Image (cartoon, rainbow, N blue to C red; front, side, top):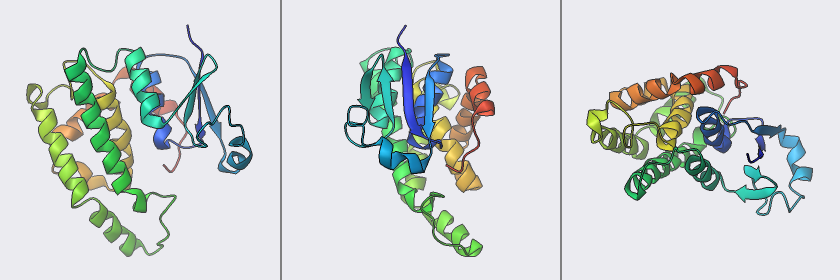
Length: 212
């Protein structure tokens, strides 16, 4: 059995989807979390961080980098990437849309938010979740509904990394803006189903509380 080491900061961030995949697959791994102040020295290890970024995944000493490439590899390894190429492509669509949503919300990420006035912050969040983000979520609602009326999962008849990506991003969005799913009830119901999966629920109950 391969030995896995995931290296990232002491936050959920872009490594959390990988952690959720490990959790759902019941696969042990070393979750190496570093403090931000450690990074300046740590990133000098070029053999470990070939592109100077995290997360990285070490698989028996071999290094993989880029968060979605890592997550896609893990999903394929653990049977969470769909049953055929069409299902895999559909998983990729969902994950890429959620990646675009993440980038659209960068300005209100707790680590980037400079505003201190609560009223202005509330307006910034409302603005951020309108327009492009609302359109993307509405599209995902329709995408989900096209598969068994939206009563199961995004792709096929079992959980995939696409559903875990929604669990990851949905948790972040609800923390930032609780009304986020008001117009997409099928997405909210899927989020709740995935978060209630025994392995996911167990992992989320035990993971460290972090701002992002």
